[in-house]
Image (cartoon, rainbow, N blue to C red; front, side, top):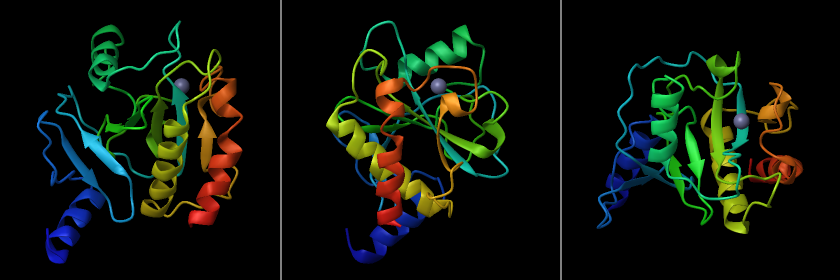
Length: 195
Ligand SMILES: [Zn+2]
């Protein structure tokens, strides 16, 4: 890919178009924003679509199932759509145990992850139960890279107290689990240095 083509893809990714310039054998499409991590885009059908009017905070979640395990984006999509009756998966991103980042909702879409705060926030879910276990090093690396990149894309100041939040900062929940929540200070520091 030449530089011009790369820039074109980067701009497409930044605009949330998810321009697929890598097509691995499994049929998944991946894209990277300029200076951002690789994000895998899955083909998911959403029942409705509403555009988010502003982006002020990034909210971190865990899947929080009864056992600490990985989940596919399709599993969560099915659960949120069929069990909860939502438009589809509520999170914008899912970070797997191996650090791979999947896109859930389109970045510009209103999420369903933090009650009363979906209109101006992005939701990132880290797969696992972090009351029972610790996130993997790969998950932390990907979380740092993704949050730092989102701060750049949306011009968010990572030093502000309400920019990078745990779900429990907004709603009555123990999400994202004590072992992940205790690491959010490190994520903020990483983003500050990256900025
Ligand atoms: Zn949550």
